[in-house]
Every structure is written in structure tokens, then in C-alpha cells.
Amino acid sequence: MTREAREAEVSDYVDALDATVRHLADDTPPSLHVLGFSQGAATASRWALWGDTAVDRLVLWGGTPAYDLDLAEHAASLRALDLTLVAGTEDPYVTDDRWAAIRRRLQAHDIPVTTRTFEGGHRIDPAPLRALVAPA
Image (cartoon, rainbow, N blue to C red; front, side, top):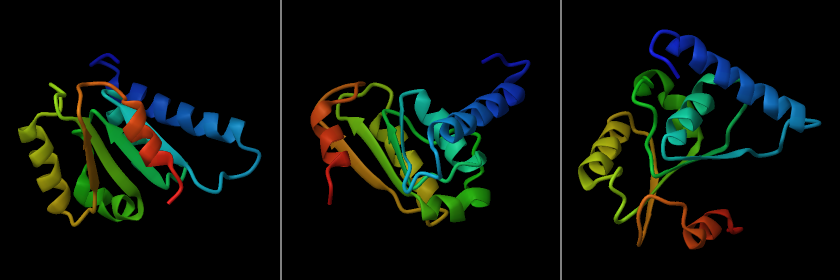
């Protein structure tokens, strides 16, 4: 993504993700779960809020919601999601300070969030991933 065309490029990828779901689904999927890893967490969070596709569950793994999302404007949509943040205890990109800051930012808008940690670094670990997708 370039600085010069950033807004257009964000709009393009949100539109592309919506088009992909329309292409892959014969009908509207009964439930859509989205996982964004690392920098993909920003992409996933923008799509969940700015796209036309209804997202039921948003998992941001090793990342946080995009910094440019207006949480006040999107608070109702975020409250309707099952929002989960996941990070490794040794993840250099999701420090304790950054983790606390995003929780405060979400709490300021009464946006519920589930947080999960696992022993490890900046990677998708199979065991916590299986736990997230296991039937309740």
C-alpha cells in the first residue's frame, strides 16, 4: 500500500474481499468468522466494519484493530461482533503496553472483547487456534 493512494487502495481491498465472499458463497453464509494475523489484523478489522459482508466473529491474532478506525462511530457494529484478540506471551509486536492500550480503547466505547494468550511469539499456534474453532 502506498501513502499516495492509501484510501483508494484500502477501498479496493475491502471491495475485493466483499467480491470474493459473493463469488464463493451461493447464498449468504450462515456465519462468517474472520481471522487477521499480524498486519492482516488491520485489514480484517477494516473489512469487518467498512465492507458490505456481515462478519459474525473477528479474531485479531498478533495484531489489533486498525489505528484509523473510529471506534465511536463503529461501536455498535463492534458490539455486535464476537471480537477476540490473541497474542503470544513473547510476541514482540503485542507488548503488554500495546495490549493494555487497545483494551482501554475498546472499553472506552463499551466494546466487549475476549483476550487469549499462549506461550510463544509472533505466530499462529495450532493449539489455541483449534480451541477457538472448537464447537462450544
